[in-house]
Image: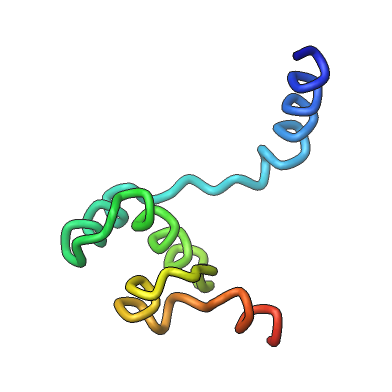
Length: 78
């Protein structure tokens, strides 16, 4: 447990400052409008916010958000 806690502390130290808060109002609006989970909507809202794409293998999300999503294969080929 001590090792896990130390690794977590280090990760937060290095990665934490790079975290970007998700606009939850936008995420909830996406979830409501498109009938997707709030969990999925958070990633899509963050991708919109950062003007990037969201990596997903979820076919429904790919169909609903073709401009906002890419498969892992597509991202690796770019």
